[in-house]
Amino acid sequence: MQKTGYRLAEFDVVDALSTRLPVAVIQFAFGLGCSGLMVVGRIVVDALAPTAGPFALIYPATLIATLFGRWPAGIIAASSSFLWVWYFVLPGAWSFHFAKASDVPRTLVNAVSVLIVLLLAEIFRRAVRNAVAERDTELKQTELLLRELDHRTNNNFTIVASLLDLPKRRQTSPEAKAALEAAAGRVHSFAAANQALYEGDLGSETLAMAPYLTSLTSHIGSALFLPDSVKLTIEADETQLPRDQAVSIGVVLNEAVTNAAKHAFAPDQPGSIEVQFRVEGDRWWLKVSDDGRGVSQKRAPSGLSSSLIDAFAARAGGRIERSSLEPGTQVCLNGPLPLISSSRPSKAVDV
Image 1: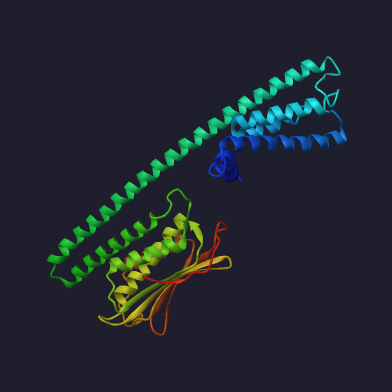
Image 2: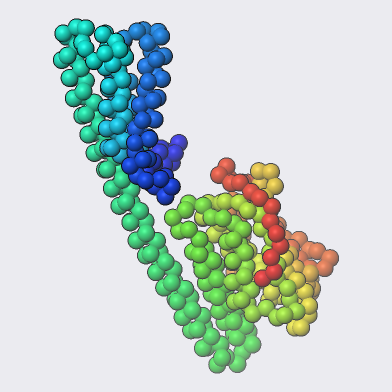
């Protein structure tokens, strides 16, 4: 309801139609339209209580015309409505003569009051427009700063990965070399997740999951330097989730794909890693499966990787399940769907 109010306050007929019609035509037509609605309302009132509050409906007509069509539309609505009421409604109908002397000051007071309403409505409209313009400018500046921060964050990830790569080259211990290599790979993967996340609209509170997860999976595949013999694919339904929840799901995807890429296949062994994100009923689920050697034949995931998956699965509001396939393994994360979500079927994408 609050967002609807914001959109209504920002609506401007001239802005909406200026690409199709001249501004003067838009304002004249909108002012007459508001006046026409006033006439319809006045006819209904006269059917129930003739001549009661003859000028009353001019105020909302003028207010609406000014707020959404600017002051020229307000003047058109006020003047045409006022003349119509004066001619057709006031005693001495069908003329501009006053049947009662007391109607003269009453008419003048109402005319001045309508002009005051018009003036205040225009002041309010301009204040709202200025506030909207300032808000948009601040949002653009904030987005620019966030983009710059994202760029610097990615640079920092690259620097950290390079710092880990230097001692790795000098290591003679296979265990230490493998540990440094795993750390550098995780840094590259988090950099990929960060880049995929901020490619979207930074001002939105939600994130479109299909493009986000597709981009993230592509970045992960590039960072892992998968051999041509291993095929990485993703299918993701079109749905919107809160950004924090989307990030947590992305981290789980990142760790699961990284584990599968590193441990599921022997050197030069062909295989595939499949990522699926589905929405069914009131729940979503993420599956990362491979057709590799299976848990019993490949190295178990590192304690850090398993801890990251469990921690971010909880942050995503989901439950994690690990199972064996014939052949391969599968990591499945599922959770309840927020009320803000809406979904559409997906298509498979090779990354």
